[in-house]
Image (cartoon, rainbow, N blue to C red; front, side, top):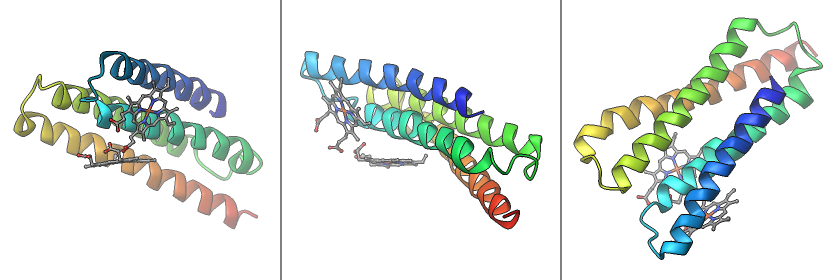
Length: 129
Ligand code: HEM
Ligand code: HEM
C-alpha cells in the first residue's frame, strides 16, 4: 500500500506542477486554488499516507482489516480526483458554482473520510502496541 500511495502521490505532483508551470508561463494565476489542492491533497497527503503505511502500519500489519485499508485508499483517491476536477471546472469558469458545489462537497467529505480511516488505523496500531 505504501508503494501504491507513493506512485499516486508523484502522479498528482506531476499534474499539479504542470498546472503551476502553466499558470507561471501564462501569467494567469486563475487556477491557483486547483494547483494548491492538487499539490496539498494529491501530493502531500498521499505522500504522508505512504509514510504512515511504511513506518507505522507495516509493523502492525494484521491489526487492521483489508477492508479498512481498501476503503481508506479509495476514499482518498476518489475524493482527490473529484476535488481536482471540480476546482478545475470552477476556477476555469467552465461550470457555475451552484452546479459543481454538491460534487465538490461530496469529494471533500471523501477526502475527510480518508483522513478519518487513517486515524482509526493508527489508533488500532497503537493499541496493538
Ligand atoms: C514547478 C514548480 C511550481 C510552479 C511553477 C508553481 C506555480 C505556482 C503559481 C503561479 C502559484 C500562484 C501564486 C499566486 O498567484 O499567488 C502557486 C501557488 C501555490 N503553489 Fe505552486 N508552483 C510550483 C510548485 C509547488 C509545490 C511543489 C507545491 C507544494 C507541494 C506548491 C504549492 C502551492 C500552494 C499551496 C500555492 C498557493 C499559495 C497561496 O495561497 O498563496 N507549488 N504556485
Ligand atoms: C478536502 C477538504 C478541503 C476543503 C473543502 C478545502 C477548502 C478550501 C477553501 C474553501 C479554501 C479557500 C480558497 C480560496 O482562496 O477561495 C482553501 C484554501 C487552501 N487550502 Fe484547502 N481545503 C481542503 C483541504 C486542504 C488540505 C488537506 C490542505 C493541505 C494539506 C489544504 C491547503 C490549503 C491551502 C494552502 C489554501 C490556500 C491556497 C488557496 O487559496 O488555494 N486544503 N481550502
